[in-house]
Each structure stands twice: as C-alpha cells, then as structure tokens.
Amino acid sequence: MSAARHPDALLRGLVGRFRIPGDVGAIEPYGSGHINDTYCVAVRQAGAPVRYILQRINTAVFKDPAALMDNVRRVTAHLAADLARRGAEDVTRRCLSLVPTIDGASWLDDGSGAWRVYLFIEGARTFDQIETPAQAGAAARAFGEFQRRLADLPAPRLADTIPNFHHTRSRFDVLRAAIDADAHNRAASVREAIGFALAREPIVDVLLRAQAAGTIPERVTHNDTKLNNVMLDDATGEGLCVIDLDTVMPGLVLYDFGDMCRTATRPTPEDERDLSKVRMVPGMFEALARGYLASAGSFLVPGEFDLLAFSARLISFEIGIRFLADYLQGDVYFKTHRPGQNADRCRCQFAMVESFERHEEWMNRLIADLRARGPEAPA
Ligand code: ADP
Ligand code: GN1
Ligand code: MG
Image (cartoon, rainbow, N blue to C red):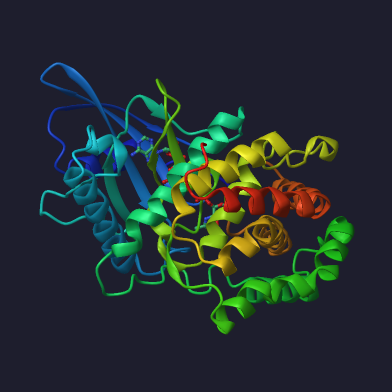
C-alpha cells in the first residue's frame, strides 16, 4: 500500500471531536510505521505549545477496532496504575495516555476510519535503525519490563486483535498460496528468495510445537517489538515508553525477543539493498540479551530460555516471508514508498536469518552464561 495523507479539513474536524483544549496549529504526518496513519497535532494552550498524536487505525489490518481499543484502554490503565503505585515520576511519559473524545469514548469512527488520540511523549524519540549497543540494551530492557508489568493484568484474556498473527505455519501457507497464484507475475523476480523460504519450512513449527507440548507458556506480549516501537529518553537514553500497543495480546515472549533481535542488532535500514552490510552485530546482540534478561530473566522458564537465540532466526524469517507474500500479492498490506520495496525488505530479513544461523551457537552460549549468572546481570 502506498502512503497517502488525509485532507487537512478532515483532520481538523477530527481533532475537534477529542478533548483537546486550545488553538490547533499544524497537523503533519509523523513517524515511519508500516500500518497506521499517524499525525502530529500542534496546539497552543494558554500560550504554551503542546503536541498530540492523532492516529487512524488501519481497519483493513485490525478488523475489530472496538476490541482493539478495549485492549489498549485496559493495558494503558494497568501500566499507569502500576507506575503510580510505585511512585514513578512522569507517569504520562512512561506509558501511553489516551485522550478521550468529547463524548468520553476512547476512540471514534467517523466513517473514514477508526481514530484515536494520545498525549505526545516529549523529550524522547524512536529510532528506525540502531546506532549503539546501549540503545539495544535500553530497548530490550523496556520490552522485558513491559512483559513483566503485564503479567498480572486482570482477567478476562485480551482479545486477539489479529488472529494467528505469529502463527508461522499459517504465514508460510499464505506465502505458498501467493507463490502458486503469482497474481502480479512477480515470482520470477524473487526466485532466489522463494527458494530460500521454501528450504526453511522445517523451522516454522518449532515454537508452535513447544507451546502445544506445554514447555513455553502463553503470556501477555507486545508482538511488534521492532526498535521504533519503543521511545528512548533524549537525556538519559533509557527505554522510556513502549508504544504501538495494537498487537498487545496473548502470545509468546519469544515473538518479542525475536523481533527485538531482528531490528535492534542490524546496522542498516529494514529495506537495505546492499546485503553485504546486513548482519547481526555481536556487540548489539550481547547488549540486547543483557538488557532483556535484566528485566525478564526473573520470570522466564527453561523452555523460553532455551529458544531465545532460535527466536531471532525464526521471527526474522517470519517477517521476511510476510514481506515476500505481500510483494507477490501486489503490496496490499505494508505501506511502501517505492516499487520493489517489499522484495528488498524480504531479502534484508533473509540476510538476517543467515547471519543468525551462522551465530546461533555463540548466541546460545552467551544466553546460557547470562542465565547462569542470574537475572541481576548488569545491563
Ligand atoms: P504504526 O502502527 O504505524 O507503526 P505507531 O503507533 O508505531 O504506528 O506510531 C508511529 C510512530 O509515531 C512511532 O514510531 C513514533 O515515532 C511516533 N509516536 C507514536 N506514538 C507516539 C507518542 N505518544 N508520542 C510521541 N511519538 C509517538
Ligand atoms: C509492522 O506497525 P509497525 O510498522 O510497527 C507490522 C509488524 C511487522 C513490521 C515490520 C500490525 O509494524 O508485524 O513486523 O511492520 N505490524 C502489523 O517492520 O502487521
Ligand atoms: Mg509502530
């Protein structure tokens, strides 16, 4: 899907329907997410500049926005209450805060889509590409902390906002159907990537089997832990706030750890075309593993520890086959900014799979070592 912006008048009308006092200034597209339409809204309140995030939830992807927003409301309220209880400073910088509509709802449907507003978290930013090992450690620690804090989210079970989201077998079947249909005559241009994918079919069931066997438990997980879904504090570098909560639902911690590895150990953009640059940087992985285990090491069970390194390879593969299937289907899911971008994204993820395959023994040894030292290993 190619990126497009909404008319200014429509956006201003929407902002007027949320509890946003003050004089509304510019409304500009914001961020580089592949799914939702995100805008930054500048407002002057009694002379002070304040910003908000206005977002259109992609309802082609999230078919039940009411259930999704119910999840987001429960999760943000739980995190805010936990922070307040622990006397944290700046609670509204450390978890997302929904701004209600004039009618007191957490979102609205205006016929053009499902819209919501968050307070803009100031003095922090997201990164599309990792720059230092310290960032990898900070991001991973924040995602681990996020999982830990949601462990006691009261019942009922969160809604599955996208059924089978990380069901790698289903993702593989979708790819196979897309190859067979070849509806846009693109298969020939990605022959090598298709061969790479088909040759790795045996890995797609590993986590599903372990879950079915009961060696890894279902937990509340984020499920989209790419690096640009955590805000790092400008002043301290700390992983301040986990964002993009649309896929927070029951899942496996290994999905989260794997996607952190995919995005926070690779020194290039996600669609890098020079594949000689695409690799897992060991120093980044080490910092990431330390950061994650510093916050999550205390609650992981042996079956989870054992598959952490493998999850990096599996999730890089899973996202790679999703990009490949979307390319074959005509770029209907992920936003693209140029032709062939999804094919490039796929090749880049597959280069990461190869890099993780080469380093898996070393990654396993490092994790075993950190595990032996206990959860308090310094990050
Ligand atoms: P998508 O689902 O499309 O990835 P995100 O919710 O991740 O959408 O938002 C896109 C980007 O907007 C983020 O990567 C981040 O840079 C920025 N962003 C989102 N929410 C906030 C917020 N509350 N404060 C500041 N920036 C935000
Ligand atoms: C999408 O929304 P965003 O850009 O954070 C996608 C993830 C993929 C990721 C690949 C709901 O994440 O699953 O891993 O792109 N989100 C959804 O960059 O499909
Ligand atoms: Mg995002």
